[in-house]
Image (cartoon, rainbow, N blue to C red; front, side):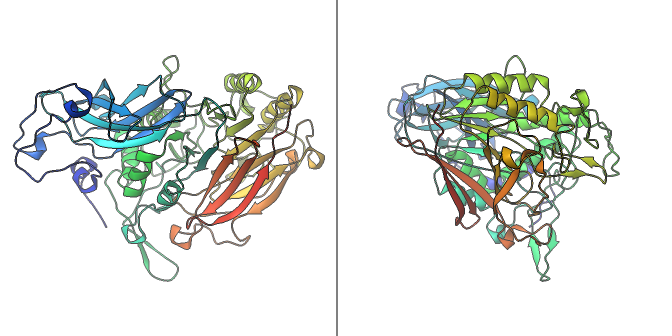
Length: 531
């Protein structure tokens, strides 16, 4: 299915959930029914005169009694949110938020605070036309559950890698239906572990499969080439929102998002100059600036006023869980042979400021479980060319290069007796469970820990990657055959996500790895270490 027109002409084909009329008169005084904030009705003789919400709504960055609500208008308009803990919106509160303007690609967000704990919150977004304040969009509804103040069961999911390697939205396949599989499990929230888009991966109308049949993609102008302009980066996020599974998911499951490389370009690092004929813009730092802006515009992320481009952050979800979201991309040194014997700017991976932040947050955390959400795995070797490395792992042997930074973090965790640290990640396009054992490691000054890998979400399946023995990883589970042919399409079924359940009474963490059909392939119970 191919659309050769720009996205801005494409929206009405993918509206979801809005009350749409086919003409006639539309009265927009619905707000007064549930809130008492009466507005004079706007009389509209044409649907085109009314703002629309073409890509739905989303919630995210739930933290204590706070949350972020996101949406996008199709024109300059003011965002308004009503919310209540009653589906009928009795006693709803109403917040008039910021204007969605061209400078933010008509995206906007509202920060909710002082929310009741452990409650299902129902919200609806409308947009008020700035050129005629009597005109409103139809409302678009969403829901999320707030974090508990006391011990309660916690259940969440994670994965990564959306719409990569040319595998886009195929209506014949059911679209990006792994999102529907996850939504049906009703997780409290979802961690997107990076590669939320593939800005360097154009989507063609057809991809020939091994059996001679064709995978048929929805296509757009912005996804027809690598992203270089801000509009093209934004178009990558809009592309994913064309999928009804994604929009339905976003309206019901809060998102905690981080980025990896494909939000900009493959294996990028700050200061890199591209040697890629597909690009006219060769300065990766410029591309990264545009990619960062689009990423932050299109996810329900709480923007740090002191550092508005910052992605790493942490979230408390009740007394049993705290999540630490890393950014292994923005502060790294150049990809190299990665064999340096001393730490320096060249061996940076998280970077010194982020390392200090992570140590401090881990040390002061009172949560039973500390989940480090990492956009790249620890012990899997990811090459960049024939001699350089994209990941911190550089092959068997002692800690060298970027591994020195991780060794410092792991040593700190041991020295401060920080218990129950689990790493969740994606990036490599298959699922696995790894146990890191100091007794089997080259570097041994750390506490044993688990790392769980998930993905991809509607992308090509690859792997498995080679393990590096520096930190003693052992494969406890592998989701794919060792001889899997590279770049398997989603229709082959090798798409994976993970779930985590923390029992409120025993505090046992149960981690499961699940496939596209919703079948649990592996599960393990992790009893908490008592301090």
